Image (tube, rainbow, N blue to C red; front, side, top):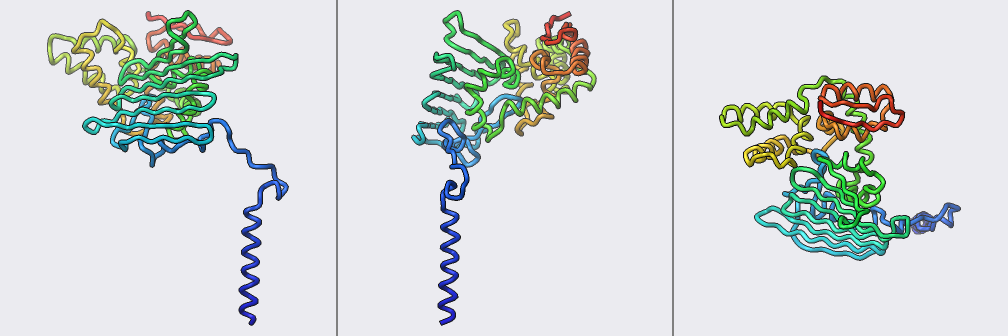
Length: 339
């Protein structure tokens, strides 16, 4: 009899605990739970998560598709006023991806061709001024990344270029974040380009105290040597460029956009870029080594630096072979010119 009574009391206790745990917050005097009705991360499909159908990572400040980690097929979902679909195909193991995300405020189309060429197109129905806005992010396998805002056939269209996404974002951070911050964060498993950029800047400032090893003019001379008639000279130039690691990457990316390069030079530069590409995702320290000699990156971050940091940057520019006039300007913007 006593055992039956004991079991009954235990049952009542468990029921009471369960009931308390299931009561709404309002019943406990707490504010009601607020569900994100916009574009919250938790409302999206898990297509880009580590266990999803495709995986992206940031390598040398460029979004790269992790080609071996993909699952072919098509999926779609409509939930919380968000429509998403993804299609993954592969040719000899090399995947292509087509992703669509539509919300009441924004439409995004992401396409990756043969795991190399990335293109993200965003349409926002209201940019805050009562008008729609279109923005396209185009990242080829190598060379400059382009950010196009508006219809390029109109006079109001804007276009920005950079060899990496951190610098590209700094050129127009508000528009970039409005169109691409959420989708890029999902692609990079919660990593924010804004926060990564802030941490990278501190690492760049620390790295800037290191001496210059190779400036712009020396890199250009070695690129010219890649087209030398003697094979020995070409090999020597290639080895010299490789020995300087990722610090010369911005200059190599920029050189690919010059029409004056021969087929031999262009092929060799692409081979060097491929060999210098790391296999692990970016960290602030590795990004700092890559951006330390990128004059355009420094130009973009100068307004965020203190006077002492600007002096350090000025000395760095001088060593790179550039002239600057930003130290005396309270809101400086570097004006670069080759000596």
